[in-house]
Image (cartoon, rainbow, N blue to C red):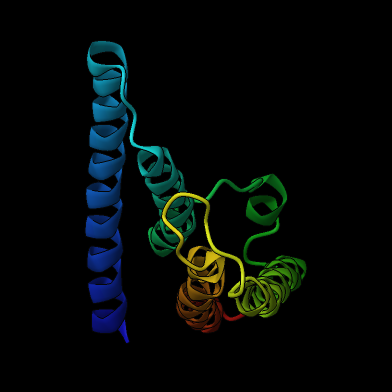
Length: 160
């Protein structure tokens, strides 16, 4: 499972790098063509916006894989190594699972519901833009499973 998650992390990293570079290039070209030639491609801003959405959602999975999300750790760290600390961490994990499952179910509904609507300039189904929500939820779920396994193994070592 570790090799799979490392491969996913590498893919997510490169998708993020490429999409950020594309956004930067698109917006730069938009500005240059607007001020020098007086012309703006309507689809450029739309592509940049959709790339931003995908980058944010896939980036959240990337950050989860690296353990980089912000967290208030005062109480969990204070209770580390105790039964109360174990149950607090377990509760935090459970809340994360509930959130990700909700994100997946609602994102899937939104994706299927929005397949009829097309974007104004590119005329692609809006469901294709929203498809990143359930995809990101699946990736977050994988990383959460890994983190839960690590947590439970460390609990056994601590003897709590």
